[in-house]
Length: 81
Image (cartoon, rainbow, N blue to C red; front, side, top):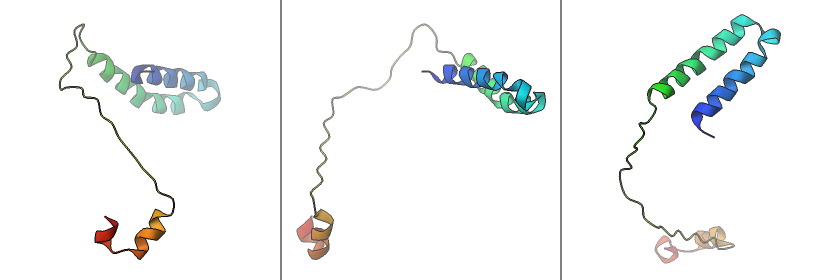
């Protein structure tokens, strides 16, 4: 879900609460959401989008050794490394 869609949903949810919360509360809550929505609509990308940079395949390996913290406390830091 895009940020614009999330903001629109939040606005709709607040509007649904107008009767119970009152106009003043809803108007104050909606003001920043409407400003952000207007900003997003102004910054709308053009039909042609350019992607800068490059993509690479990355492999990440994480290993968690059971008892490693206790073992590290008994060894010299250079030996542990």
